[in-house]
Amino acid sequence: MDVPLENLFEQFIAGLYGESIDAGALISASGNLSPQEQLSIYRGSVLGNLSQALGDIFPVVKACVGDDFFNAMAVKYIAENPSRSSSLDDYGEQLPKFISLFPPLQNFPYLEDVALLEWHWHRTFHRRDEVAFDARSLGLVQEQKMDSITFQLPASLTLLESNYPVVKIWEMTSGLVPEQTITLAETQAEGREDFVIWRVDLETKVQVLSEVEAALLKAIQKGDSLGTICQHALSYYPNEEVNEALSAAVAEGWIASYC
Amino acid sequence: MSTPEFCSSPYDGVGIGLRSTHYQTILDTLPKVPWFEALTDNYMNEGGLPLHHLEQVRTHYPLTFHGVGMSLGSADPLDQNYLKKLKALIARFQPIHISDHLCWTSHLGRHSNDLLPMPYTSAALRHVVERIDQVQSFLGQRILVENVSSYLSYKMSVMEEAEFFAEVVKQADCLMLCDINNIYVSASNHQFDAISYLDKMPIERIKEMHLAGYENQGEFLLDTHGEAIHPPVWDLYKQALNRFGNVPTLIEWDTNIPTFDVLLAEREKAQNCINNCVDEYSKEPSNGRTA
Image (cartoon, rainbow over all chains, first blue to last red; front, side, top):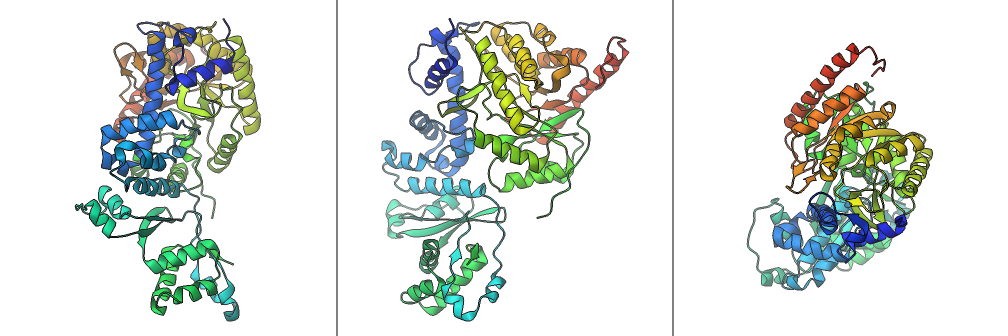
């Protein structure tokens, strides 16, 4: 019997992802193991590798729900979301969405945003290295042209928002700040928060933004000129806060360049 | 950015698989290890800390590149994006050589992220040979191909693994990475003779050997790279050295990774095996092969 390679691989990969296949038609019994048992070794290995990858990328989600729950959830996630890349670093992008729809987690609405934070932290960690913005270069801009310049955010920077204090949850669970008890009602009372994930050299950072900082970065992301940004911001916030936010954006490394 | 000066020591003796948990120890203590092997798939991102550490390690040690994502046996087209990234990494880090596995890992875009065995047929042989040829043409160099551990036999296979492996390497005119632990694991799982496997290898093409620890699952041996190298694998390694002579060898450890001194101790054991073998090997008048 000579099955074309494509047919063999198609059936085998389906079996690895839990679909029902006739293992006996493809695999010989060997030693003490039946064809199905041999296939199961590979299925276990694939599940193990992908679960491990998810746990590595989402350690805070894993700590929040516990190892057993996470691993059981991973089995369901993997069945619905096969790996599409040779790199395990690419695996797990759909997990935040999956969590938001996963019935057993309906009482934990903040977990989707915690997962989003972790996914973007992971991607930022591996983004290309960028040269820090030199604010002195702004001195080259003629004063009358200053209003028309536009800033660019670093490629590694991601702006996110949540109705829950996910940065605090992430920091506490990661052991970056001491743990404290927060009730769901309290988290909702704290209101929506904007936060930013970015890299300074090789260090990946996460920070909650003030209202004016968030407005500023969103306007830069939209491509607004400095003049438009300032005019708009000053109609909502005091001059001092806008200036502080602009300084923070430069000092923290949230600006990559201008043109 | 200035180009860092890379270490140009010779590729010889027993190297160690570079793992992120050991970066700091290695860079702080600069242990006496002749070379390290980098898992290329861990460095295919655009930037960040892993690439930075790899660059630092490279300034002190020669590197080999070892991958798991080439999917040489797959029926999907070769992943050109993967090969381009690999080529860029090669240009940046100047490794001694590049290796990947005699296996397939994906089909129609669904990836297993695991090393799945090939069926041992003439059609599969032609298929893999053609793909290795394409990879070598693209990279502009010969690659090393490694045997994988396996836990199943396909009904359609008409050759033994050793015969298939040796033929692929000869017909593709590539080089060979002989994983001694994998031979032992597969021989035990499929009840074939590991020594006769060694005897079928084309010695002149073997450029590296791998050693690692398997896990005994009772019904079968699982290649976890999560334990110390087991005694029968050491025995088989000595048999391999007796046949192949002084071949650079790697200590691999991927799960339950211990402190670096444990790897150094395993390295020392393997280095002693090589030293003893070279003494014995050079006494044999028929062994004119130089290491």
